[in-house]
Length: 425
Image 1 (cartoon, rainbow, N blue to C red):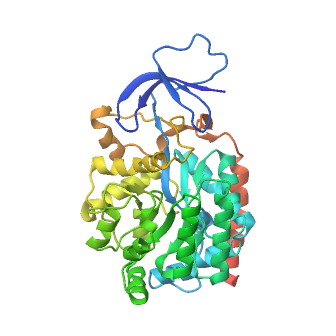
Image 2 (image 1 turned 90 degrees about the vertical axis):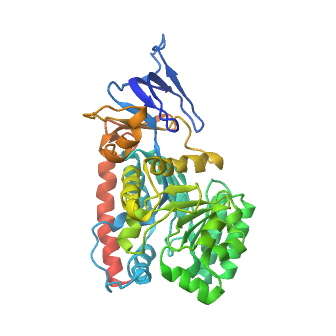
Image 3 (image 1 turned 90 degrees about the horizontal axis):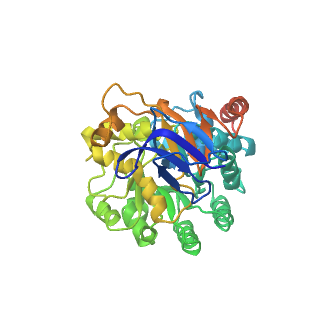
């Protein structure tokens, strides 16, 4: 059933033009919207939502997420307290992802999708890892997202850290998934990917007309490893293997790059995604987009599912470390839309909308939208969410799933996961 959002103010996501219109929302992957001056003569077959005093705009995209980290919130300290980023990976995230089983993966995906929808995010680009449950893991996540009503672009984090057999399983899972769904070829990072595995991943991306999704220079140790073992810097290594040739390639973090590496990225068609809060949490450094070009997106790196929060963090932290202002932070926030559209991925057409109940005490319009974006709008203002023309959040309540039941199950599984991490897998 088509949706009619009445009496609201539509904000165009690109021009920021404000229009006081009724909005007719059509269903489907490539569904459109119509801005109407008057109500249709026959509204009997429409799902009507009164949006008086509310603002409607295109919903949000997360440029880099980690479903696998969803059950980590509140867990105790690891058995060994990390002293640096590599030890954070070893004693926290690589311990966690190795302990995931099928139920935990499904619960992680469901809770992530639910959180995304409640934050106005209807499309997620995810980078998954579960080394002891690789086969079929991406389909589990895809089905969970679709159950909640969120669209997705998934990949499995291929790596040699568990041995060549595990790396091959990651390659096989990627090939199986890409044979029937849109997705990317995931790699962990340069320092855990050998020459052969990297070459196989690039070949897969070419075969399925996809791209690579990889962490790049998140910590200085990644660069040091590349120079020591390959006698070149990370972006030079990726460029040599053709990974920068793909328009769909996503380079995560990109903190510790020199000017030559930035130039290689700037002159390529690939994309960079920044993850400010994760970088702060891991104490690995600060993102600076200067010299990288305009293809910069914003992600959460699994810290949470709130893209408005991530954009604000990028702006405020960037005041000291980045070349960023009101216009550029909003552009980065919306660049994931452009990434999807440019590369022909489906699931984020005009009929993906968020209705914001933003009762601001000051004037609000096209001329000062960016000030409100940085200093006013937040996820608490999300009232309704439409995904692919379907109302998936109505009056802050998820419509396609029993949120309470999922959360009860995930809490139980989180305890099981944490215990498993402490006793060993």
